[in-house]
Length: 315
Image (cartoon, rainbow, N blue to C red; front, side, top):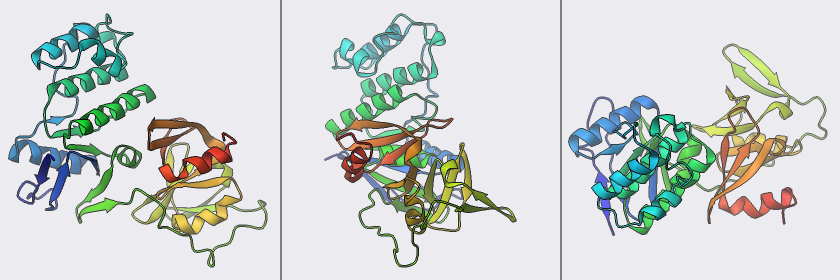
């Protein structure tokens, strides 16, 4: 089995905490951190381990068509995967004659993904591969990760979005100045404290409080898109804006259940009335697509898929 270790010597800098992390070819590892942390880690990997990081900054040929770009790299890397299969794998077959400078951001990203697959570089590090792309492109990236796992290539993905960390990672970490900490991916061990908090007897006159600066804002539950956990505290998301709550997810879960909220993952509670789509990315990877401005995709635990299908009368 292929392995790659990021050791304390690589991460020894003023901008990063020292840590050891071993990647293997059987799992995809994600690290969730802000832009400054990502930049510091990328610099460390590039300078101290000479490792290339795929961040869509390296060149493509924008005057050439999609087909010519992919064909060029197919020959350059002496890729053994048939060229037509590469086109289909990355959903490029319908834009082969389109010059790259006329392509959408998502189409260009899929050309990058095709290039990365054909490069054969191992281990493989990605930075923000899903930022600003459409659902089709997310699906092709997840397919790309499956191909890497089939080849036993260690993969590390750096993201600043918790949903992406949970969606893409078999193993996920949060990187902070205090160190690197595992993110729990399953919710089975969490049980709400039913003795301390009870669901409201009626849906009338109940507001969800959030503290902003020195004010307490009261929100109608039906305004809320979803609630996510950050550092043990709950953050309420409404119209793409986040509001900190004093409660934990377990504390608020029972109170909101009567309003149609559902604990879809250890780190998320969603308003089921605002779920637009259940997305199946792979056999054991699912998301809920929200009906909000950014069409947020929220991780759905594989242990919850049957339950939520029953809630929407899909079974």
